Image (cartoon, rainbow, N blue to C red; front, side, top):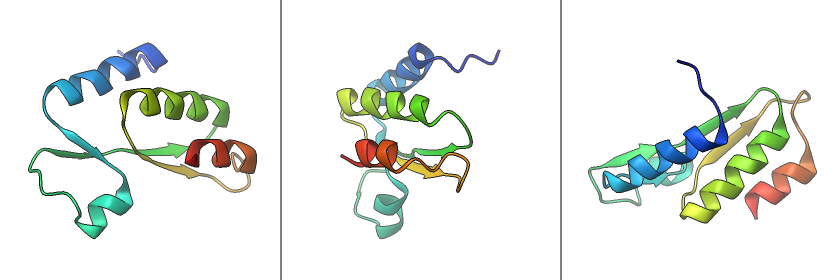
Length: 87
């Protein structure tokens, strides 16, 4: 089943949090600032539809989750959306 809806992503995020996992950005993981053994690195490669990435980032913000977003240049490189996600 390939269900990439925002609702399914929210369900996944909630399951991770409920299971005691600590979501990390790539930077946080590489700098080793977390001491928990239950870690998950969230990295999103944005190959198309950058507006959907913004919606995912808003959802993550609501849940207190931080993640890393990689945008393809020049295809999905939208500075205004990237700025909104980083804030």
